[in-house]
Length: 392
Ligand code: PMV
Image 1 (cartoon, rainbow, N blue to C red):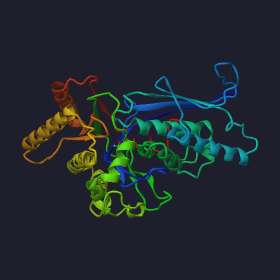
Image 2 (image 1 turned 120 degrees about the vertical axis):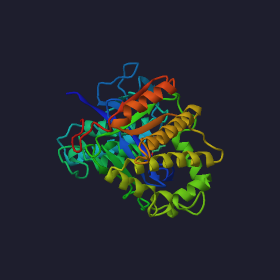
Image 3 (image 1 turned 180 degrees about the horizontal axis):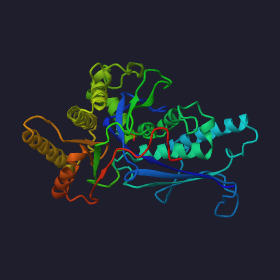
């Protein structure tokens, strides 16, 4: 019998940005964040994991290590790196499972081969690590049949999403939000052991069906400063980040970071505003907060010493075009609408523009006329995943 599982996981794009870790091992954030999970048809990671005693080394002897391919290229699984941590956590759970169920096939000791493919540019600020680690975690959970073993989920027949989300977080923080569809918050929590730092679906994929995301690939190049390195530098040096998180100064002690403080998590902060806007389907507020959040995140990156610059000239031209378009919409509607488009940029130059269905065509025409995007622009429904009905 072949022991193999394939899982596809979608990308999520944050509208309240996660930036900074208060615990770099457990991936506990310095602030809460909120994202929209995108449709799997455009941006997704598909991962196959297989455990097999028949795997051989080049010289024909039995394989004695795990191997991983990303987009067809073999990657080294560095000891104590993020892949290794994710794999060994899942393997440890399988070992426990086999101990509690003696008739289970012994898979935990078998070498693994994992192949993952992204349908979009990797590490270019399009959240490839979110979908990548979500797919990896879910593929290993499916391979190891952990659905009956991990702590209970609302849909027992399926993999327990909250438990998987916490495991995915340890690969890449933002991955914890890709295990759920629709609109997903990641509450930073207050505890040092991370027990209350978890993703939570605030509205499912059916909630706001006319919300779309337009993906604008300004550059498919790999970013110069990884989010891991960038976050650490920001936490250590940026006074603006300290204000964002409600701590006295850069490099504040871990215990100083707690939900309920700062520009993001404090009373009336961006988390509260954004959740409220989504619940009320208030696009004007959604757009205002999303753009302000993106701007503040990039200001924080620039406030880091030495400064980090993720947006390029094309990104800034997109900001100008969207700003001018919104002014036009406000004039056209005599102030009834303030915004028809909301840009956001992650740790890279590529824009995601959120817009309502009725405006998508006009915005794409505008963007394609103004920008010679190498890879064109695509528009995307929010998510293809159904709550409690996963593709594995
Ligand atoms: O999950 P990471 O470590 O790749 O960090 C992602 C950070 C941002 O994409 C910039 C923001 C976010 O909340 O997704």
